[in-house]
Every structure is written in C-alpha cells, then in structure tokens.
Image (cartoon, rainbow, N blue to C red; front, side, top):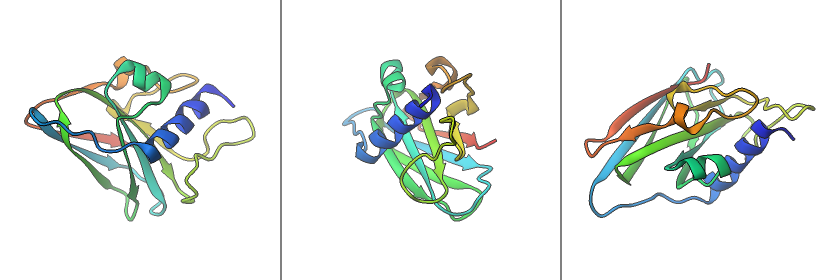
Length: 145
C-alpha cells in the first residue's frame, strides 16, 4: 500500500469517527463548495484538519459524508474556532465506505485537497493545502480535476 493510499485511508477512518469541533467564542463557519464532481452518485468523504501534525497522521478534527447528487456539492462546518485549516476528501463513487485502489495501491476513486493542492507520490504538504478561517467565516472552493 503506497503513501497516498495510506494517507487517504487514514482520512476515511478519522472522518467516519470525527465529530464537529465547537468553540464558545471566535466561532466561524466554513463552507466548502466542491465542484467538478464527474459522477453524480455516491458520497464525498471529507476530513477537516487544523494542524500539520493532524494532517500528516490523518487525525481529522471533524468530518462528514456528503451525498453526491450533482456535479457540485456544498459542505458546511459550523462553530469552528478561527485559525488555519486543511481539507482532504475523496469521492466514494460506489458508496462502500472505502477508498478503492488499483493493484499497485494507487487510488482509483477521485480525491482532492484544499487550495486544489497536489502532492507527488502522496498527499500535498500541509503548507500547500492550509488556509485561514476568520471570524467572518469563509467559502472555500475545491475542484476534482
């Protein structure tokens, strides 16, 4: 199993178990507008990260499974503390709850990251995917390319 597969599978596991983070003060809302979804079925498995350490070890602070019913999906994370975040996601086209891979361990289902960041032989670095969430909230656009 290659590094890309391991990192994305870690996202799946933590996404399934993660709950929404909340903050009493400085709470903000993050809206993800996810476009270029080629197949209009299955689910988007989305993991939200707030540190480089969490990004690297696959420990999401929040996660969700969003139904795909068109070529654009909107996901909202509410009551987040302001700060730096990153997003990892994949399109679970066959809705089996797992990131499908080919015989070499390379993902065969679409995946994407915040800032439309790309990695080489694995997920992108935290610095390429990280973005700031302010108290006014944020709309962040991600595309499957």
